[in-house]
Image (cartoon, rainbow, N blue to C red):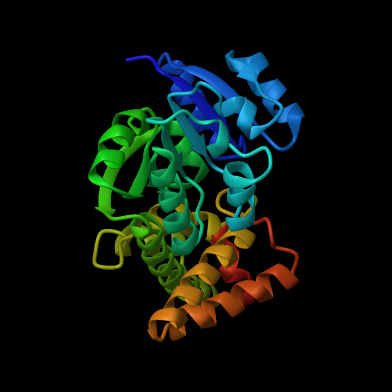
Amino acid sequence: MSMNIAFLGLGVMGAPMARHLAAAGHGLTVYNRTAAKSEAWVAAYGGEAAATPAAAAHGADVVIACVGADADLEAVTLGPDGAFAAMRPGALFIDHTTVSAAIARRLAAEGDARGLAVADAPVSGGQAGAENGKLTIMVGGSDAAFAAAEPVMTAYALRIGHMGPAGSGQLTKMVNQLCIAGILQGLSEGVALGLKAGLDMDAVVDVISKGAAHSWQMDNRARTMIRGEFDFGFAVDWMRKDLGLALDEARRLGVPLPMAALVDQFYADVQAMGGARQDTSSLIRRLIR
């Protein structure tokens, strides 16, 4: 069924997700803080560009956000020109931003007071997953919000899971990022040792990727790490933001995360080396200087 959808945020993730929705036959109104991006997207894929989140959300069946951080999300939803004030009762709000569980719960409460269905739905799969429509989406919110959001998100998702009440999607994304950080550190150390030892690391990866060491990161990042190629993928800056969210939540819950704290500092080293916008696999740069 075709719907009127407002999409807020046309970055490396948001732009292809919005494109998949347009290809599925939905009517799109898009907003981006840099208006030129909205205009370029509309020129390429159709729909309309809006000057504010509120203007984009007016009359929409669904409003989707994919912005940067808590403050950005608050601005596009509850700010002076925010979407929530313009949304009609019964409309659905889906947030794909990786943010704190606290703001996810706040938006769910604000939405409930306004008669809106709200789902916090962070994604995994990176830019390639967004481009190919094969993201994994972790959803928090009521059963009704999930039921409304799931058919919309199938346009760009391979796997969608309902993780529990408001905030559960964001908490699941924190678990996801913690696991990735640990795998990348282990992969970095293994590749660095093999290179220093003079091994044919392509041959090593061919063998060990068929055993217990196998991971998505090994399949998709080991060979680029071997070649020292990092100008793509999920940026170090964004991983540090995500690890910061997890570390903050862990402090609140009294859960020690020593590996995450250490890898976060290793990523700070990579930032200092000029790798802030490089892929997270650039973690190996600390070890092979």
